[in-house]
Image 1 (cartoon, rainbow, N blue to C red):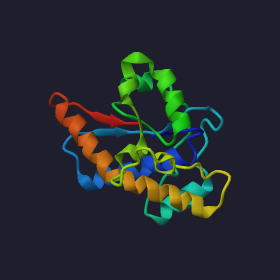
Image 2: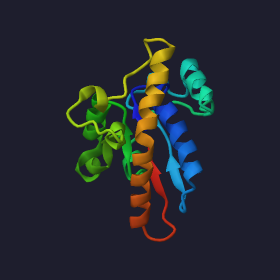
Image 3: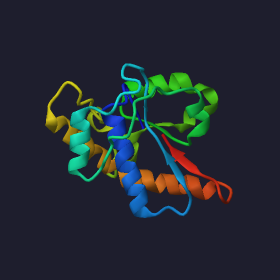
Image 4: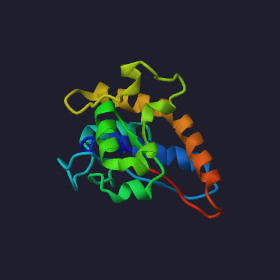
Length: 168
């Protein structure tokens, strides 16, 4: 899961994906992580508003620490899911030809589909807003979870036995 600073959207998405993956009970291990395209907050905990919004939904993201996407992430993860078009463009630029297929927008997995609708393609950054912005982020992330988990299962099924699937 990737946003700009890795203190709002991507930690909440990481936490929700961890929770939903546990609930689904994957047959193979799945590595889940989050990062930012910029190093503004490296090492910091998620924004207190993000932690509070996630906790209201039973998701604890307090142990997540902000980090920047590194070149090894493109080797390590099967999917790098951007929260918006800006971070998607940064990831594509960093991915190189070999790994561009791994870079996707999170909301591509939303059941309602988001093709052609910029508001439905992007999970808005709630950093400069109020509490409702963080709730909206969680609502959008939730919409993508079932489709994303289905995709992770498809990726895991294509791996040799014992392989680990991963989403970052």
